[in-house]
Amino acid sequence: MTRHSSLVTSLAIAGLALCALNAPARAQDPVTQPASQEAVSKDPVTTIPSGLIRLSANQVEFYYDRFVIQADGNVNVALPGGVDVTGDAFSMDLRLHRFLVAGNVAISAGAQTLHGAAMSDFLNFHRVYFVPVTDQPDRWTYLD
Image 1 (cartoon, rainbow, N blue to C red):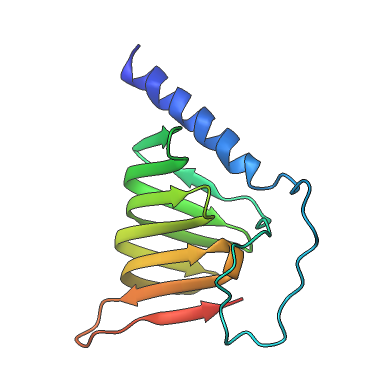
Image 2: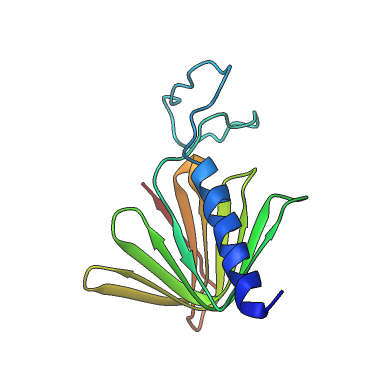
């Protein structure tokens, strides 16, 4: 198998795995939002995030035994709502519905661009963490 066909196979598997995120949950009761967003429940999250995430990179790998997608080199992640995230590396845990982009991260939305070291999105919780490159330790949290 050539490197090109291996990459195409990996991309196809990754695309199918990402499509599974949009599948409706079976045999589950509806989950209602808690009144307060401050408290984080320790119970497992049963909601499935919606929206399509498009991933491209020099190398994309899917680990079927761990349900993890990893990508390296010129990573580009297109998120719902017109947000693009670029970086050096990407990792997504499909079971926990969260991903991380690290290394020379740029987040672009419209005319705004933020540069930083890392960005992670916890899709179930609608919470994004961003580590900017500043002279002081810092972490920004975004809620949608």
